[in-house]
Length: 595
Image (tube, rainbow, N blue to C red; front, side, top):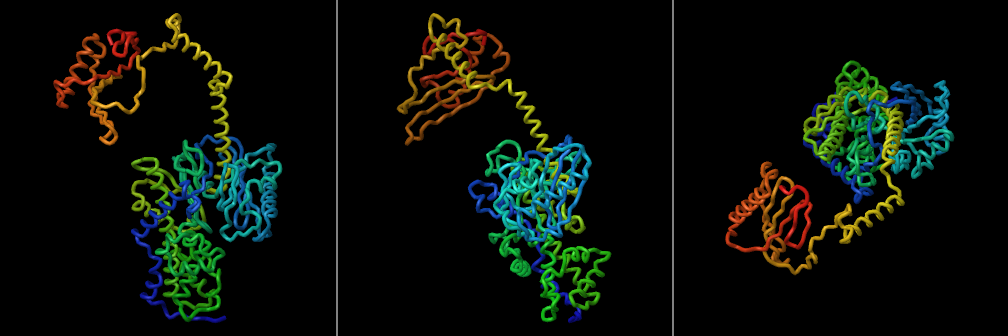
């Protein structure tokens, strides 16, 4: 074993090496703005296919409201194990099956058969007489969803490389492995995190996962999710922001260490944002920084990929055990370090984690600002459910939540640690889907009396036509319920009309006087000057002569203001009440004669 002793890392050298990781607030604002732009491209039907931030719809239309009842089951595929949960009346139970025997890569039938076996073993352990359950499935990889219960895998991430799954419906694959179990929902782990929030704590419409990778989701206004047909209410959207920057949008933020980590990854050039935040990559970033700091004095262990673990980084940043852990890690790398070197190692780990936290805050601020703007709110108040080992184990992540203030000043946000988010959330998605289905059934049953069949509509059409014919005939006009009153208008405009006209419009509690100037298109087309006059209640309810005297006073006032006194113009009068016309310019009122 080659042992290299450090002589203490100089302050200037340390600052120079860590400078690429120091992101100012202004830089984070630029990252936020670029994320917003990328999100808009992902939501737009025109640019969705070229977007780096995919903004995938989940077809989840509501978050839990606290009324969930019954029993549901959730299953989740994880990197090193699979899990199953039961949800019954607010109580959550869970089980786990280790997948160490199912090494990656494996074939699709093996992967889903293993999950089905774990689920069956879990259900056997529930000791319940119930044989039918609603099942939610958390699948933490990029999927193109076409329904709540249908999702096609776009690509593997987080080290998974299982042949035969990409491009296929993962629900169908799991369904074929669970012959008797209906899967009613497939869920991304971020969605499960959002859905796990306690409804009594207020609205929680954002989910954030910071673990081996990173992702987020939120409840968007459905009308802005152009890739789906739904336009009413809200729609859950998974951002898939890990691929943000794959088009070069983060080139001025990426450090030399990020480029080295990317080149050594399974997917160079992909998931650039995730590779600066996810726990799967932070250890490698730290290792490359150490190689830079120890330039010329490295060891075989230090040059070996994967020997610096994210868990070690989290412990090194801890104020109590950090220096001792730093010494242990440095020695494992073949480095005999002084106290100063251990302190420098702690600074490196803190810088890497704080940059990741700042970038995560910028992305979250983009989501919050998007929600606030599209809902046309002066201030957005919501909770953000957070899950993942990095957040749970690294206290500095919580400190970075204070960055949301300057990055999204129009939002009031509460960060909530998710309680077994992916587990409870998966089951809650199934429960909410069941609740909404029951509500839809109840609404459909209530509205069934209002639904008319084609035969019924045909009968209405025939009856209306008969009444119209009775109203048009002189002999039967008086007995018709459809009056069919003549207007004595014998033609519609043909475009040759020219001149100035005075128009009166009486309807409701206001009265309008208009001067309409009709010219050719070349001369400016139609120009309208108007003024609104109120009709006092005593006039509206008084004798007819008083009403029309008031109308004349308004006309005189308008003519005076327009300099039209002494001019003679054709006059049209809109009178929005039932009238019996005897000619184009003569009517008799029907109903209350005083009005």
